[in-house]
Image (cartoon, rainbow, N blue to C red; front, side, top):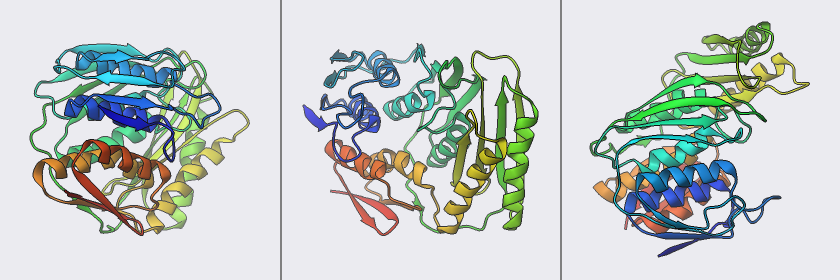
Length: 340
């Protein structure tokens, strides 16, 4: 059994998601201890529980310690099953973080899989559902992993109430990649959302982001989405580059002007562009297990250049190396992996 120290480096929920997903994928049992030990409230939160329970159902796993606030979990995978699954975080816990867990664990599926997941679609410390759909899933599609996500209802902190459906299509051997060269920005696209609040907020967010990008000579096309009826209220602005794998997002909150939301999203994206990165720093973290899986199965090296190698990224690398016969190399802002 592989034993993972959940307090390693960044010490957050990413360790749980990656470890249980790779356990399901490789059929190697895992024990995770010291879960989120460094956090103010250690142990499993609702979104972590949901991710583990979905993976448990998908691969008929035997588990121990899968309870709220648990600091130790054992996950023993069995035969993978293909079915339609419904899950609900029950809070505003991030749906996108649950999806990170599920998509990696289902990477080797041979049949179409459908899931319906409820919770938060736009939540702090997690990618918005629009970023997930237009940046992360775009990257996976380039690798040959096709996933279709539909947003049915948006959910914000603290009530949640969001809902998405996702269809995972069978994938053949994934394609190796070398995303290290900077491309010329063709166009920035985006989505400015307002739910249950004044409609003009969406326009103000989009207008501010558009103006800031225009000052840098960048053309943008930001869609405004108005959701009138919902279980919770909130706003968001998500941006991405049409021909690249760079994205950003920003959330509205009480006392935060709409213009601030648009500015924040645009400045984050401009920082990524100025860095010369081919992959933004958040996507970099999520790509780690996929590039390792490709290299371990094909022997072909994968690489990318990002704007910053975060502790999240380094933590994910450490977890992946416990499961797969690969070795990562970090050089300035570039990450590569080879088989060992």
